[in-house]
Image (cartoon, rainbow, N blue to C red; front, top):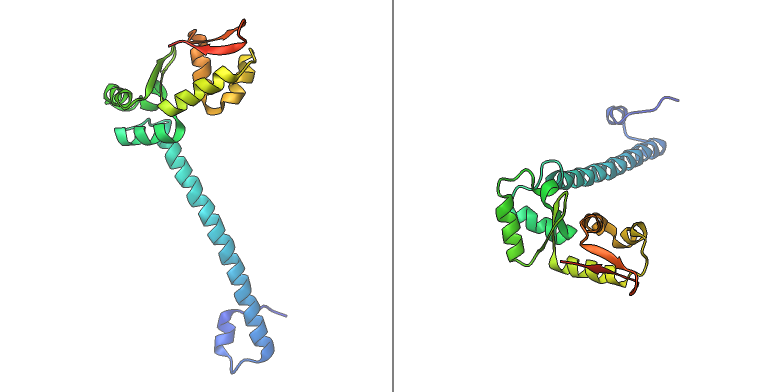
Length: 170
């Protein structure tokens, strides 16, 4: 039996029940395919939005104060060299963020601008950890592990053996 197309149905005389059923099957198949296409399209659009966000923050750097503020709120920190390298207003952005309460931590490799609440959370979490292994500590700090390693390298955090807790020096 050859598969009929919609054109075949429109050219014929009044449809029989089996032809109606066949047409209904074709329409269901089209609806299924359309549903799959819409789902794929949504995934593609989400991926494009994610890439657009990453591009703003990574390779191209942050261009302006609005994006810097948004990033600081969402991610909790900025790396001056990595995130602000492409803007001519780097010093003004850092100065303005510090004026709004952000904490600047200057490391050997990069300077971090940290949201005040995120920094308080970082210090509180760090002080509660009684493990001296930096790798184990970094796992508990999550996205702020790079900041921890930078501060550790520069001697801005250390493990107090007597008190068995991490301390921050600023």
